[in-house]
Length: 191
Image 1 (cartoon, rainbow, N blue to C red):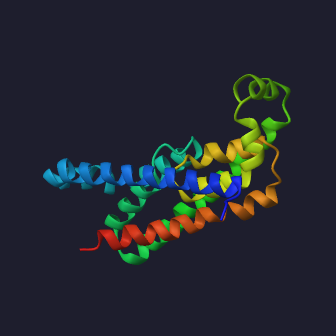
Image 2: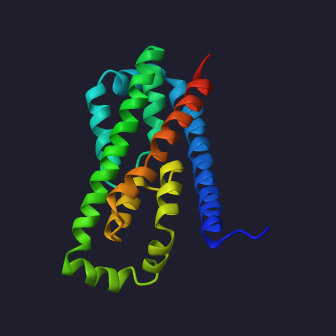
């Protein structure tokens, strides 16, 4: 059975995203065993005592390219309180991620209409622009489910002129990611 080029793109980039996730998890477990386990009270005092700062860092990260993986914030939420508190935090993180993804998508749509962006697109995105137009929906799904930077992907897809309704529909995979990853974090951190 021969796969279409779009399915091949989805599978290839999905596996690449899973490999990045495995690398991030390995780095987290290494950091936890070497650094945090030696003096956990310092980490608890620094990070768990200031939830507003953590939420602001998360919002900034999700808006600006998504530098920090949401799973780190899920781990923070797990260690912060009860199971219900954890569920509310994961739902909050998912809502923020989905909403800020749509905001960056709208910024991309705004840029799409600007003459200055056309120059940038011709000069710097000449090679990747046809792929973006061809695989846009699959790119949304892959970025929603894997550690590929979500807001950067939303910005690019918006700048490609995709319709907002289609984007919002396929961006719901982001909520699925938070549900699945939230469950995995919950199961792996129970003692």
